[in-house]
Amino acid sequence: MDNSEITHSGKKPMGIMQIDGAKEVAFEVHTFSKAQSMLGFKVAFTISSKENTENLLKAKYLSGGSVYIPVQMAAAEALIDKEGYIEKVNNIYRKRKNTAIKRLNELGY
Image (cartoon, rainbow, N blue to C red):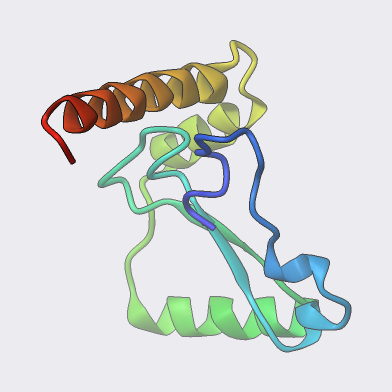
């Protein structure tokens, strides 16, 4: 769901957790790469059942490494989106998309 907040139409996609029984068999992973512009920080969170999440944490522990604590704190703050950053990003992307479409149309595509 890393692109779930970035939308050109204003309509957000449905997540798997909206399906009955999904949390028992699936994970929904949200990254901060797109909507919060935190590419390269490798910070994300997941939604699932408690058992699935605990198993994921065990696997993550065995694989080593973690996200630098100040980056985790910045990501948590970014979720609040007090200044409407995600909407600003969506407007920028929408304008870029419309400019590209207009230019391609001018070129006959």
